[in-house]
Image (cartoon, rainbow, N blue to C red; front, side):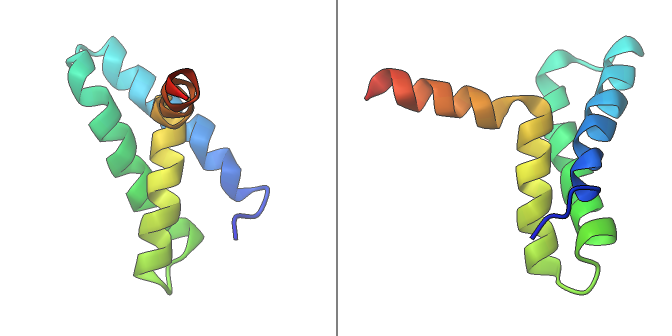
Length: 80
């Protein structure tokens, strides 16, 4: 499970994606970049001994950083 200090990676991912946006990366690629950063952080930092768990946690962090997780929840709630 994520420890409280592991969640600090989410704002770090957001910051790195914002820097890429400032340097001209197309906006449509930014969610994918956030996912990649999340997965890499999940595998390398959070769960270096378990690739499956690191990937899953990384996907959650990347989706949270890109806003897709909360946006997806809002869409599902509005349709129900």
